[in-house]
Image 1 (tube, helix red, strand yellow):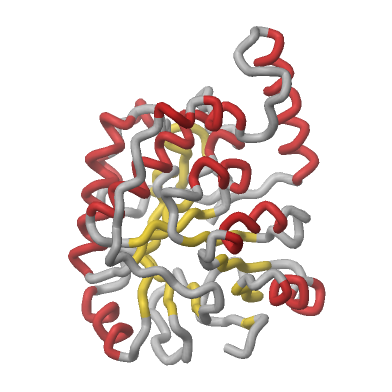
Image 2 (cartoon, rainbow, N blue to C red):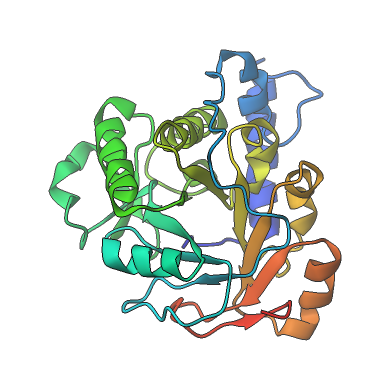
Length: 286
């Protein structure tokens, strides 16, 4: 999960950032949100093809549970669960019931309870991201983080997961303790998606709405938190237009406040509690 600031605050920070870049001649005056990444689009590696990867249909029922133990009885097409806590046998059980399973881990923050926590040197640990025991990572240090993330992806593959949800991949929009740029974030996210594809797993873009345009060719579907609360769901339309599924949750809004719009947009949205336990209220039938 991510910590959200208001759209107004984030938009204001973006305006200030663009103004500063314009002053120093770093971007053209016609630039818009995400321009730093778009300006360097040609320098990005090509998307790794994954013809056998799971591609959910735009209308797919799902459950997102990060608390353990997992309630495997929910009648849905897709489960999104934790990479470390969920055992291979649980993934196999879900597969036997006809479910696909997404492997969740945070690729942009360090968590002090994870078994690989000692693999992260202090030099890549930044400010707290607002959650107890979590700190932002310096995603510029791919030489350090790359092997750790590859090992986590290998773990997902060894348990039989079908896709990977990378959390906290929008650090450039937050106070991380590092001067991260949009370009650096795009490069890191592209690395993650390509590494998932190399292991035969789909890549899920978590939030990071400002960089959907450059990242769309690399990611297979999207997962968003609170876009209706922050009035930014229109930014997810490129996924739908590309025939790629959009999943999402709202924590504070009641279903009548967002479900009609979510269904009309062909999004798969749930009402969830912030703890992400088994409780869920889907906008669609299941």
